[in-house]
Length: 450
Image 1 (cartoon, rainbow, N blue to C red):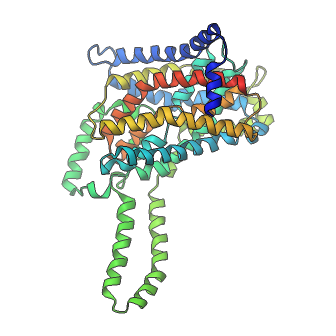
Image 2: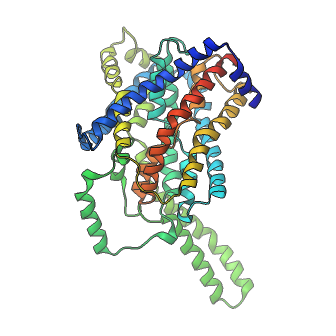
Image 3: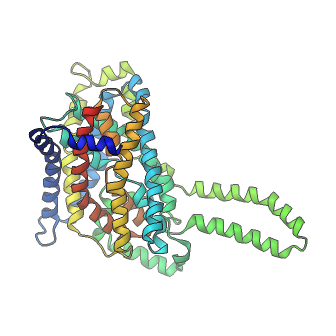
């Protein structure tokens, strides 16, 4: 892989290298300009647009603009044949998460974050932004004249990114949800009066809630349950362990005790696992973007239905044309919201500078290098769509994005490391401007070798 990167770096003359640099950096500069507009509009010094407006805009993106974009582009692109050939896209999301998880463990070992942030460090390294930011990057690159992705650049790119989104949503509402629960040793049980006071304070301060919480998945705190802000998994399984130990102390015959525990432990564990599964909010997976993806797959893979909905002569073409107009507002709105989020600045963090640098380096510099190795290996094994550079680009992009903004919302929902998530996401998105520029240049050069 290092030899391949060396060849990429040395290929081409100076003039072509300069043209390649401009063609890859310009799309990111366009996105940066949009984000700067949002930053200026939301900055406290100017206060041109109030924070509540950005929250309403994020809800419009989530409930309207993003579903319209997903449905129109994924629905037109997908067929039964392509559905079969695109199998590596969701698999690649899982691979990038597993590799990021391993890198997160290494960051914990090397940087030694405070004990209460061990799981948080792993999560923030493992889970990247697989939704709004990749869609914005793809749309901006396809808006350029000299991109290498062919005439259906945006449609295919949005389709590939959308096809991967449902995997990220499932992981967030299952694995991430439970890993982001507050640590047992730092959890404080509050009485009913304190709970009531917190609820009243929450209602009073709802308008001042950080934009980070609403930026990518607005309304996520509406899914809060009585167990959201408690270490449910730890409480359940620690109580199971303590019950077994108590049984062992109260029985005289050690051999009989061991046999009885062995008989009773399995049903108890199954019961505990069932309790955890019941408290997992999987019912909230079906959100507007996910529903739009499922509808697009359903419509796109049935030829007669697809002909009825998509195409110039389709009876429902006036509806899809209207959806495409609305979809056009998605990218600028997302970047304005990102700018508004950055305008709030980083919060104070107890994570430590060394750990923040470790997560950022692992997520933005090391993981993309490993991703190149994974995607190139998959290409050699003929797992990719032959000749489709956009397919390859989206796979590589899944390793390159900063930590998901959605993790900040999950942190707020679980009442765990909210300030740390805000600070880390803020700095990662600033540093991602340089890391994304670097790796997009490398990716474009790689296409000449494929």
